[in-house]
Image (cartoon, rainbow, N blue to C red; front, side):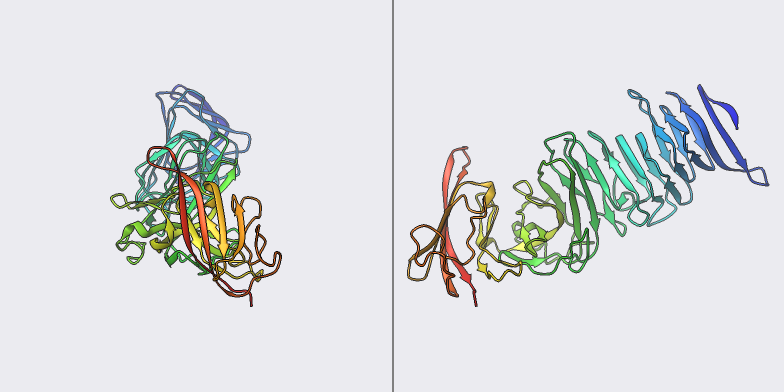
Length: 425
């Protein structure tokens, strides 16, 4: 091991030579500090050993593989930039997380994975995607953005193919894609700085895929008329209890079926696989046709697998994006076992009445689905006939009322009536 001065910095490191005298690897076994306004570069692989420290407060050029089993960090208050810009595929590996202030990716050596990320890297300020895809899906790595961190430049030729984690309480656009297509998702600002959300994009049919123990089927009753069968996103809440709005994107020229984004585009919604119900549920959709995005109108009630879908706008109540599933089959198979009203928990003062075809009330409750008070095909409401008995198969009708703020912010009473079909045989 030799002691070298790197510009204004003191470093303990060693050089491994090939027989021809060419540098094959830089091995840091001590402390390597890159001071502000100085530069460091390594043509060969950089191996930061266990117990070693690599502190970049200046500018580091990494042209080959990068392995960290020690400490990689920057000094608080400094603005170090790490440039990964090789001419061959670069492996980013190691057993410890590497903390960067700014990081740049510029490597055009591969169309699918210029950077093979098998470790965890963290960005505190900004990641620049110039050229080359960071692939962590295949190699088991993780790309983390800290609170207030951001990115620039992501496109089909440079993004993260795999998991991206966001920490903090700021809104965020995930620079994610798959199979050389950049297809971002975005979340609104969580409530707490300790909240963590992770996202990943899949250019695959969600039906039949097993992700985190969930395997969606094509079961999508009620309002959903057509499911996007070529792509999906996974969004998980890993820490905290905040809920967020979700934005997804489409591109009919590359990944999204033209039938999904056909006119009227107002019928494009975000749907979520509800593993407990074993059904796709509608999360609503505010469509931005210019930017080709869809955003949920309300904060999510659950996380997991999401995709795009078309809905029958005739059975959606605009105020609050309430969605009513009018088929009830209470046979305990986990599918439509009760009268599902999506979004009902997000409105106030709800009341549900259900009548049989002769106009006799068989069910009534306030604050529907807030404490297990749902219609399961039994006459268990007030002033009903045959209280506690299962009702016969047939057509019933419901009246739903609730409070919702109008354009002036005043509370308005919304009323919706319709039919539901009960099957108990």
